[in-house]
Length: 163
Image (cartoon, rainbow, N blue to C red; front, side, top):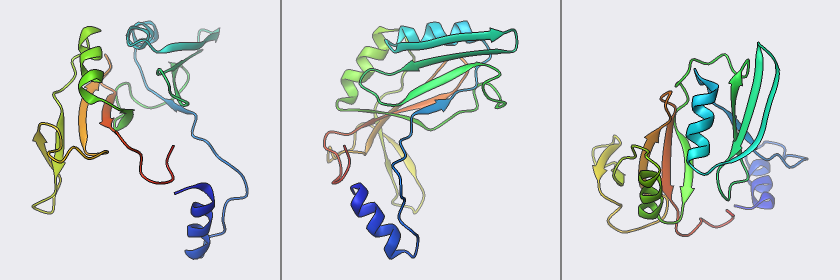
């Protein structure tokens, strides 16, 4: 769905369409050890955008995954959340096996590919890629040293209106 379609959908739901563009740019990750987290994410090949310290109570680090328009922040005084409490952070990839191989080469403990079924009315995780190979249906997961949880999601072809 493009911006125009989203505005039309919002209007059809009785909600006024947004008057400005809003882009999601940054997610704050709670970490216990800033330098350890920095080494981990740089070890993934993520670009270091900023590392700013304003004193003993505040330090902010920003990194961006390759090809992403969104970044992560972590540091001291950045978020009150408990270290390791961020979960469901998605990294969209075109080839999940290639992404897994790269993470494994970098020493990351990443799961095998899996997909979900809903046959019982509940989500059930099943080993292996989605049997029909469709986009958005195959996943793998890993965590950073603090336990913040990441999902790789394979998207070979975007849904209409998505870039």
